[in-house]
Length: 582
Ligand code: MV4
Picture (tube, rainbow, N blue to C red):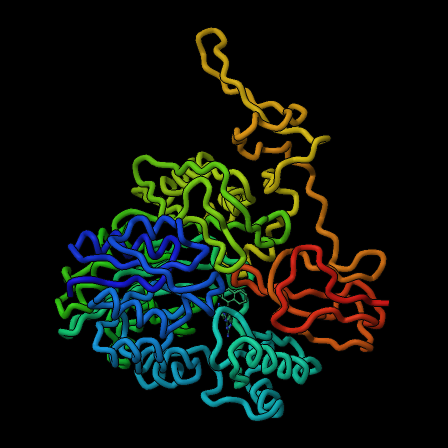
């Protein structure tokens, strides 16, 4: 293997390029027109344009990527995560082109991408999955009979889904029919596959995942587990390892089950087996991810193993470079996203005006940005991953808090204030939190995210600071003053930090005139209603996709849609009128 093309962008592209360089491989980056000046482009030995900004025309453009691989003479392709990382067709096309695929066998990708097939496969391996059906549901009657046997609550899920899309939790029989239809509709909308299945819904479980890695010489190793329960609407926020409070027996059970799944699927490369742990301690297989994950970093921090280099070694036909993984210390990852926690984690695209990463013992930052980078609505809104390691959990938490407080990102709102708020809760400090913890117990609406993504208007103030010395001691004094005159011609002025206003809660999409407006720039992916239809307050009207997140636009009034101004596929600007409700 002489070279590798990284079919991705952002922090994971930087991550893979670094690993490949350490192995002496020639690195080939690809970029969309929007990423022309991105960090990963500069870092690679060479870089190729693969098309316009929309992912469908660039990072998801299989033929274009293969053409570049041929033109660049790439030996191998690493997909990163997201985009085409779990696309069996992409993997097969790479193999058919005579290139090396840095990932699992296509059969394993296909099996684990079908949640029902994955449950059948793990059952055959003797691993307990969450109690549920092993066939797609043909009718709501089958859901009724499942509920009769397992009682409520139950979860209806998309067979070809993941990440919570198409998931409907049902607590009583009266809601079964509508939930079944909604799950099928959503599965069809997101995955073009309407098949759904049903499971017993575990209340407030912990989300524990097992890292495994397998080479082509029969070596398969459990590298440790990660607790990913600190998430919001299926978006992971904080991950940690080891899982707090997990007993040795439970850890052994997780490792053995994960390796059994690996063997049953003839797995090769890095993979993650996800489990739900009930409050009573039972472990159930949930799903398997056939890719390197965002949070692989914390496993690397406690084991010292470079999982991406291992993936490249395996793809080149070499054996794993280690025979066992004994974790040492404790590691935590904080996902720094361009989202505004005070506005419901609304995506917050914009330009990073100032950027300074924390550092010091046990602090790692994986990012793909610099000051001046644009976080756009076309891709996910991950800015950076802050990874801290400590000899024990309390040292890791202390390091995390200090690193978050010194992580300077100006120009757009980020999840940093939310992470600090989570760290300060008793539940997190005690290491005793479930997947419902963030959503059920935390209200971020009063957080001061305080950064203006735009230059303040004249009548507003701007933050300034002055460094003074009093009695021999240095102080940095922050103060707010009326916005200065425009900078000298050609001068640059960083977007000053405006005094953080008490954030007004974002108005519901409709204003007094009944106009339903777009809360942010994005693309209309689904319209639930037609002109002339009557809606009630809270009815979903349409889905606006921005930065790879779907935002359900709901009505805040009863009325009739008298003017529908959008159609699926429309790109709308923030504030655009989508429809009018009389
Ligand atoms: C579950 C579950 C409880 N019981 N399934 C599915 C998608 C994945 N991201 C999380 N999923 C879950 N599936 C059963 N039978 C709990 C989760 C879950 C979760 C569900 C709703 C909201 C947040 C969650 C966070 C982690 C896990």
